Image (cartoon, rainbow, N blue to C red; front, side, top):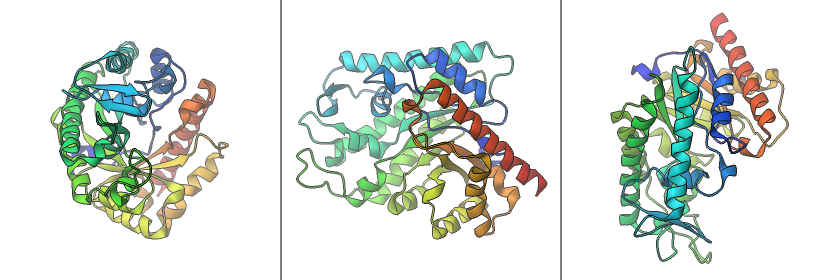
Length: 343
């Protein structure tokens, strides 16, 4: 079993977005709550504006693919401009803030997660010069995948220099993956939809980015394929060391699949909290995990493969609410760890 898949205690993390505009404050809050066995992340701050959103941030790591922002969205162009410089500057500020906070810690975190848009969602959310999505052109998609893979390797190396020996884990967020794989992404005109991308291409794209991250020193990758069955099935065939899914959207059949994955050594992240909804009590959140876990006969000792997390949306909450939500997730993880230890 690979080192990054060895049993651990149950951990807590979040989806990566964070409220506010101050990267020092954001890193301080995240690392303050997610210490010990938990999984802090490099937060991104959409409130800073374009270039700090999920797609713009990811475009900022690309190699040799300039981009700008148009009224219809992000677009690949011939030469870098102001929008690209803004995205790259925001990412550099985030990394520098991480270095400042980690450098002052007496016991720096042992792990750190980086969040980026996955290659399928990036291709769906980025446009060619003529206005159509990158998704429409096979050659453009391939160029985007390769550029993202190269950029991810550079990002892992940059973050490693300030993370004080922390294991780096890459998460690829794929909210558009199922639409991409089932042909439901609209054209620029909106009058028709684009042809579905083959599942094999999706798996190869994820594996290409994962391989680059691992070659640069990351311990593995997490794919968050959304809720659609086609995307989840494709992600299960990838080289990702973990999958991230919303617990309330997992069917009994899917729980059986996940049990097979966990028994084979894959880790699992379960989003147990929606930041846009009232925050449930710890017992309810613990039961939301254990109900499916026990229904398919997974032993409680296998809970060491689990990390609890959130759905995206923390950016819309107040700083105080975001911190309280992280604290609640830590309580849930600690309660599940107690179940595991007693089992």
